[in-house]
Image 1 (cartoon, rainbow, N blue to C red):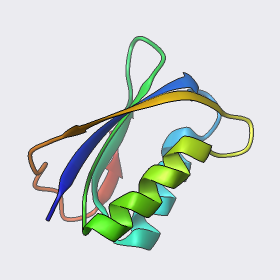
Image 2: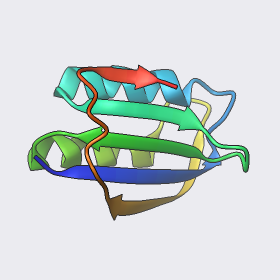
Image 3: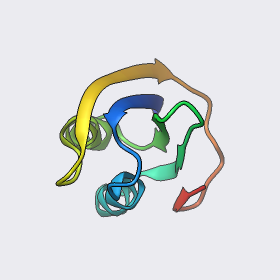
Amino acid sequence: MPVRRYLIEGRVQGVGFRYFTRKTARVLGIMGYVRNLADGSVEALGEGDAQSLEHWEASLRQGPPGSRVDSVRIEDAVSPGETEFRIR
């Protein structure tokens, strides 16, 4: 299954972005994690089928109410070996 790493920049900390990301990932059956980074961005790593990752990416670009997503960088990644989706 494909694995993608997303770096999300904008107003994405302190607005419930990680909880939004986890909820969306769990609904779509994506395994992985999300965490805040020291520079104010959010890193999300997900493993799932291509269609689920596509839907998840669209939700990451939108974000929860109160957030503002300025950019999303995407890279292929290695499986994190998670059996669920977690906030780190």
